Image (tube, rainbow, N blue to C red; front, top):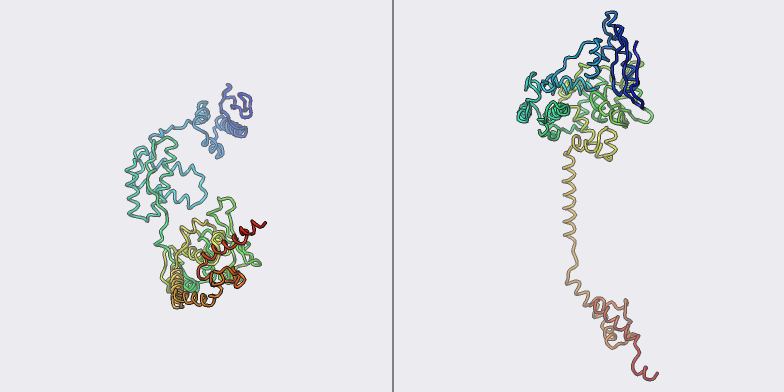
Length: 460
C-alpha cells in the first residue's frame, strides 16, 4: 500500500513515502532520516490508510507514533486527510503552568523522588505567580520576590534547591527562545549545608536505641544505618540475602542514588561485628526462601523516620534532627578516625568533597585530645626549664683549667719547637682558647716548613 522512496543517493539520503489515496498517487516527504525511521513511517501511514478506508479507530501504537512526529511532518500527513491537523500554539504566549508541565513530561525521569521534587517546585512557582502567568511577563524582580517568599517559609538549603530547579525550567524556555533572558539566572544559590542540624550519635546512645527496638529487623535497620552508613530507605530495603557474604564478612550494597555514575551502581562494605550479630539473628528468624533482608517495612506508605523517632523517645534519649542522615554522618566520622578517608568514602559511596562538606563532624573527643596534647607539651617545657643548664661562667672555668694544664705546650708553640708538643688535634688548649687563630697559625707553620731558608739556597 505504501513504499519508501529515496530522493537522492548517499548514506543518508532524503526519503519519502509514496501511497495511493482515492485512486491518486500521493507523497509525504520525510527529509534525511534513517531507514528504520522511514520503515516506521511507512507502517504508520499504511495503518492510517486502513483506518480511513474502514472507519476504524487508531490503535495505541499508531497514535503514539503520530503524536511523536514533528509539526512539519505531521502537517504534511494531515494535508492528505489521513489525520486531523494540530492546533499550533503560540510559544511566545506560553503560560507558566502549561510550559512546566510539558517540560516535566518531556523529561525521561525514572526516579520517583526526582519527579516529586520537580512537581514541588512547579507548585511553588504556580502558586506564587498564578497558572495563567505568561513566561515572558516574569522579570528579575518577580524572581527575587519569589525567593524571598520561600526564605520566610523554608530553610536556606531547601530554598537553594528550589532556585536551582527554577533556573532549569526557565533555561529551557530561554533555549526555545520563548523568553529572551532567564530571570532566575542571577539568583544566589548558597551551599546546601546546614551544620546546625548535625548531631553526633555516640555508640552508647545508639545501643540504647537498639535495645528499645521492637523486633530483630528494626535492630538491624538501626545497626546498618549507624555502623554501616547505609542510606535509608533506598539502600536498606534493596539489601538481599544473596548480597551477604558470610565467609568473607562483606556486604554488597546496591545504590539507586549513584547507579547512573559508571561503576557506582553498587559497593562493598565490611560486615562489622556490630552489624553481624544483628544480621545473624535476622537470618535465623527469616522465612524460608526470603529474598530481601528487610521484609516487614517494604510498603510505600511506611514512614521509617517517624517510627525511628518513636523508638528513640522510648529509649529515653532526646531525639536528634534528621535521624537517619545523622546516623550515616556519625558512622563516617567514626570510620575516618580509624581508616584513611579514601577507604571510608569507598565504603559509604560518596566522595571526599561530599564527606567533608556534609558528613564529617567535629566531636568533643577532638577538643579533649587537643587539650591533653597541649597539657603534655606544657609539662615537658616545665621539665626542661627545671633541668640545670651550662652557663658562661662554667664554660670560662673549664677554659682556664685547660689553659693551666697546657701552659708548657703553648710556650713550645711560641718558640717553634714542635717536638715539645705537636700541633693539630692533640693540642686541646689552643682549640679551646682561640680556634680561629689556631687555624691561621697552623697554615702559617705549614708554609714556613715548605719554604727553604736563604742560607741553604746560597749554599746550593
